[in-house]
Image (tube, rainbow, N blue to C red; front, side, top):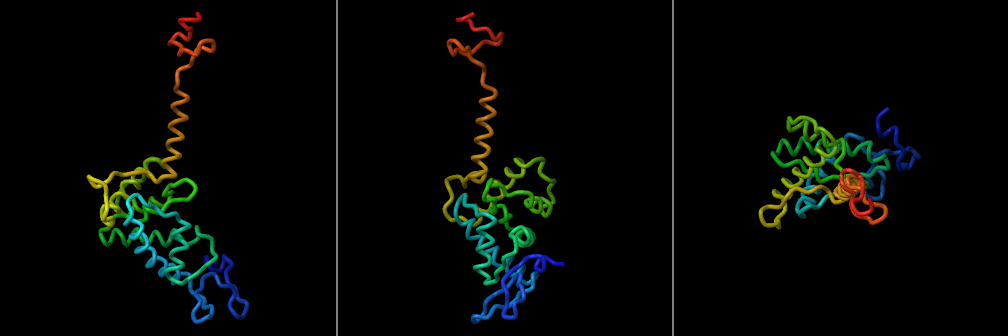
Length: 206
């Protein structure tokens, strides 16, 4: 059973469930899964180039999913995770073939601002080792996004800009650092609130 069969979709005139479809002249026409993915891949590339035209812009997986359906005219109610990976995987290969920076680095999760596990395809296609951890992966993606901006953005800051984590993930990192700093903060005297020396005994209060 393929993805289209597993996912419910729109019904045609006979009542048959359609996983992927387009509407032509008011008529709902079923579209094979492979054809839908190919059309979405073709639509995704120029959309990502457009995103790269704005310095430090990113797009979420959900936003891209809706945009490729609008651009191609092919619709689905299938869960995004059942098809967006194949769309972006094709984009990774195409960017490498063209000698372009990996435009898929511009696509992040809405909840945490990360590119996520799918970014490993960028590293694999480039012949690079896997990221040591999620933060290393996100740092690499930040560098990839900068390469995209430098190629497609007409208005870069002086010096060509700098790599940056996606805003939502940067917020996560900042909160983690603040929490870690609070944990490392030296204890204070409960009486006078002066920082305690290494011996743990207040010089003022004894």
